[in-house]
Image (cartoon, rainbow, N blue to C red; front, top):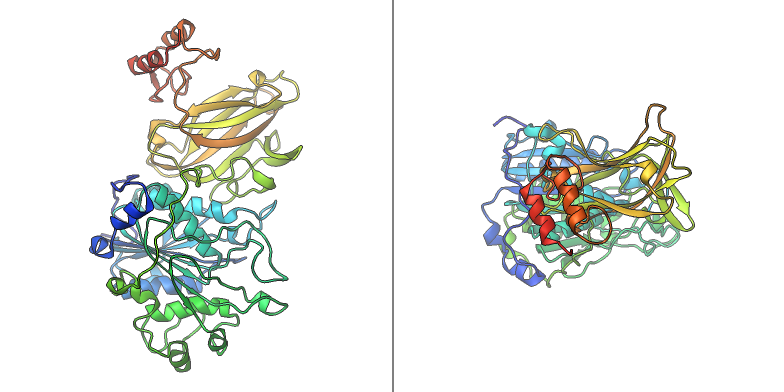
Length: 526
């Protein structure tokens, strides 16, 4: 198998595990996961520019520890794609896949608007490309990278929050994670590093119920003018916490001890006397002072690749995520005017407007397109729902199209599947919905709303709010009178035959036929 061509694996949404944290973890043990191919995901923390050296050095060290059987990939939000990192070595197989989640510039939250919720949006995107990575790489790229594999997440600083958000979504999909490792987790939520304690809404990392085992390596020096710049980590609940000595770390390594934590962990992956992560080298003095009891059975040792999974210390049970805690569309209500969820990973467009304290997205001639970040659509039939209104007069031939997009050769690049004439929209918000087409269920895509102009171009203005994916199901009330009866039956029969994206196509298969008739009759109210 050539380098960079991972074997495609079937995509699935469930692993046969029952809901409930205790049941999930009891069904998953290190021995049960042994022998599976591995996936290791590394997420960096805050960074205003491209993350390269230390994350790539860690990925290469992990692959070397696995004997070189596997491939390292790097993800970039600008393209929404995985690309092979040939410098990291490996034999091009999918036996041990190491993924670098490079979420710059999102990690610095430099987009227009408040910095809130970018961690959550990054977690959405990472989850999406782990579940259905061909979205990003085509048939020659990695397939489903979490089902049927032993998965290990490693997150440093804010990257620990991204990792936690991704694992939360895997828990809701009943997909197990063998290990979560957090390195000096630093949620930017207004509680850490006085004088610099910004609040970007980062969630505190959580050991969710689908995680077999979790460890946390951290240190802290308190706030203040100088120490506040050396961002503090925190201890976490229900994980194996290891607190490093701030005074010992201050001897050498990085200028800030916050970065020394990932260097410490690197030193437990690469067991050579003086390993380098590409930015710093561990000296003999550091080997004797950072690990006075030895480094061979610390940190990475407890991972599946490290060989010490059977000797993991006992920890408490994980936390069950609430069923509605990870919506498919991140920030669908544009809360607090943040573009999180609607920028990077291919998202963008439109303007956010404060409408009497409620933030909405406005599409007009200057910004007629609104696109969400990468999102993984559920397998089961569900609908995309949103609130929409026209602004100003209704004398226009403009149309709002709802579409799903992919950028591989598995499905059309863009599939519009619903449309609303602007002249039919009300000046007050109404809720509209459309069923997700079958070919996009269980797949990763982008949700896009586009305001298309008529012969004279775009001349309308349309507002959008509360974009969600919800199990609303098909409605047989085709005429919108609140009942399902003879008028609706007449509309369905009138649309009989090929009818993609029309309201009478209740099962979303592009045809109005006997299956749709059965669905309508099942909802009959007379």
